[in-house]
Image (cartoon, rainbow, N blue to C red; front, side, top):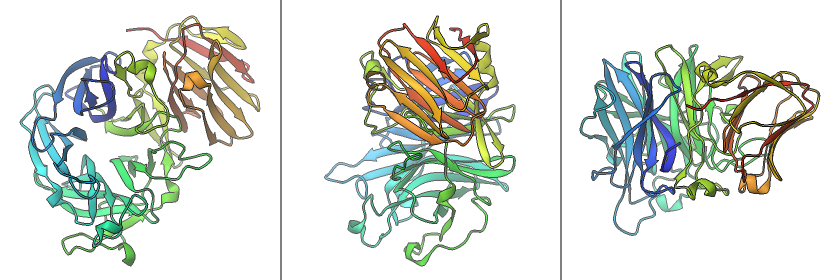
Length: 470
């Protein structure tokens, strides 16, 4: 979390010359995100972190209204950082279809500490005409000897008549660009779902796990259902049957590109296979990277925009939001499991066995168990305020009391069987891992003081560790 100001999307995640780098969306001047820069943390061990000066500010004509999200690509002892430079043109514009510039910007570094001048590599003129002004969040990878970039987009269904479009008709896609030199990029194709799946796809990420392509993204505009899509915006992944840059099927006629300079739209994603990364109240815009040990690591924003709940207790102290713990990703039986990195166990104190009702000695702890009755619950309470994890009849519920949740109420997911539970709880944040990370719930909560207790019902016993401060 930032010592002051606003934090949101993680950006530029990488391990470079042995050092882990976490850049992130940052507003140092207030806790409500009035401007967007990049912040920067580094670590040698993923435990001890150092905050550095904000490396990128909105100080150029092509990013004057925000240094938006992006990513890092490493090659030949060089760090290539790409981001979206946001510009809102002067005038009476809607900023969806007119008046917004989404510029793709490149900065390089030989040491991860000192950075080159900003290089403008793409503007709106380089994007297909069928798109709205919303194209952003570049992520780069190399495949078959060539560089590729995905960006999230919001495409019009009636590009010839923009006034007929709206959030109810626009649809989310991933745009794919190609390059031979990392500086000059050309649009090649876009990918979307077989049926409309939201109006905008943000923060795309593309990588491989055990040879399986993975497309991660954050779609906006999905209709909430009882056990999924319960946040205002979602984050999840697809497991495409083949590489995004392979030859793909042609688009349906009614969705075909209208401009002669546009590539054919390719529709390879079955929207019914989308799986959410996290079912908690506070999770969005995750990004992954591969470290020098070959681990695929995910970090998400432990927050979300436009939510009907708030974090006013931290805003009053001059800061807002945090990032999640870094999680290692493992593909198993068609599902990606998420687990906190092994290094985090270094924070554990002495293991204790707990059952029933226990008064907590401190409010930062980890709980783990594999022993459950048919129905069970874990309740963390501070006087009348509490949050409870309840399992019954194949439904797992996370329930927050009124003041603790600040508008967060209940989240429910279907899980036929639960064989393991791991909870990591901080002063105002929880991460809950079910079945070795098959399902995860991340949420903020706010208790009035630190007199906390834990109540285990239907759980014969669990291991508890108080976590050490740094």
